[in-house]
Length: 229
Image (cartoon, rainbow, N blue to C red; front, side):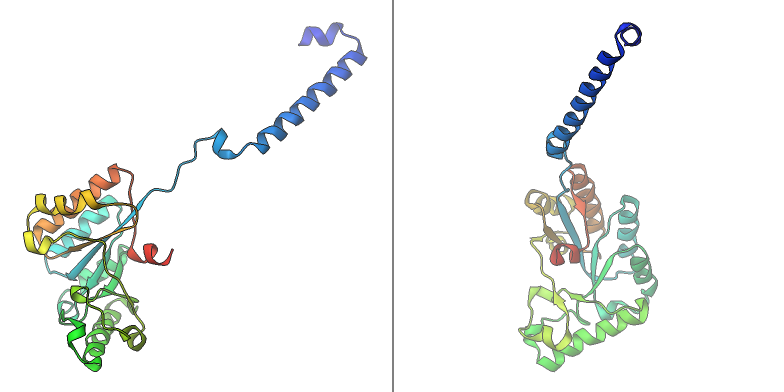
């Protein structure tokens, strides 16, 4: 190019420069008009799944569950029983510190539809107050025991009931391999997995589920992100 500049007349050089400039501008215009997806491979948003744990906190296995989730950078949702909170305040504090979502699972793990309105409300409010005393925050979400929500109760207690799409039956089998078989084949984008944090096998299965699904590209989120978005 330097040789061309040396021997070509100035007018030719100027004309060539204008042509090159015009070609460059058109090239950029074309590039801008081409959708980004055709120039670069867009990374689609990862499928999401929510791990949820009922019946805690447990004095032994909930801490082990928290340790495993923390090591893997995973946030989950814990629905707590009011009667299990005393003596386990430090576990709940760690749960909150780790960024997990804390919800209500009634005080005595009762089926709300079998109670009067006042008794059902008391089960919920008593647990919410106990959680507030530890965390400084009132829970917004509730997992009704047995998935049985009393119609109209959300107006009385201003809470959002959360059910599930996959039941691990971990409390029943207490077998790691069986839990995995009950969960992994059913997982899809937006799944809410029901587990419990009071069994050694549940801790083992939960970690296996996390490792397996993360390897498949899943992102673990707290359940509120699936409900609100």
